Image 1 (cartoon, one colour):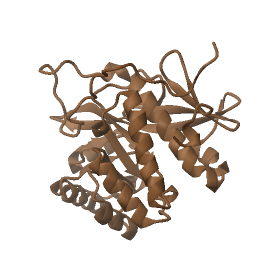
Image 2 (cartoon, rainbow, N blue to C red; image 1 turned 90 degrees about the vertical axis):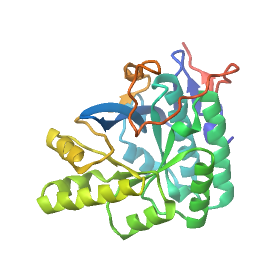
Image 3 (cartoon, one colour; image 1 turned 180 degrees about the vertical axis):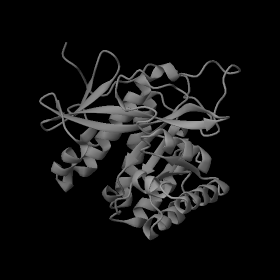
Image 4 (cartoon, rainbow, N blue to C red; image 1 turned 135 degrees about the horizontal axis):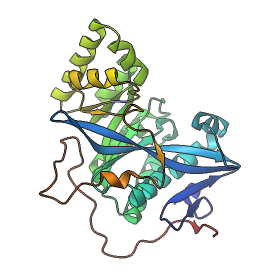
Length: 296
């Protein structure tokens, strides 16, 4: 596996969670719930993994952390953060929920990198006890160094059971191109763009038309960054499949309290259409543990 997820960069804790170490930074996973509308009610169906860097015990902004990382290290840091989220999702999230993981297209410069990333993901998922069908791979807005390598990687992800999401959709030409080329299962609408459209009747009508267009194609939609109740109401009226934002729930560091959203046994639960249809397989043998044990 890549050096970014080797023993020197992952620390396992007694509660089952993991943290990462990169230079002077300690990296932790945070998860934010994603809700689906179901018969006038909201149900938690997924969580997005978010990295939270700390320096000398003090929280740092993710933007500042990534801004200080040399370009040559981005591939390794990408793999490290992805590994942390997957391990922590297996340790502290409801087993029925989908997990959204971000991918930076700029690091996929050739096919060999994409192939290695896929192999590493499958190994980590096996150790975490997570079915690949629970994972939604979010392709962010950064430009890929090799579009062909990115498209091949996305197709390989899909062939291995992963779902694909396009992040930060804002309906400009590049976004429309991403939809056509990647053929995602889910589109996440850019928060600022959503807010702007919701502020006028004409804008909201356009937003509703786009949502219906995606849903007609079998593409689910997520409105993210919602912070006020009126935005949530308009999101439901627009027909959006899912919603995410501070108005509903803030991200929590792992270990989270989100096990309370665990679904009751089959036959007693109502599962949203946006939820992953399968739970992870029962482990048939003990997990192998990544990383070193935290000092007591």
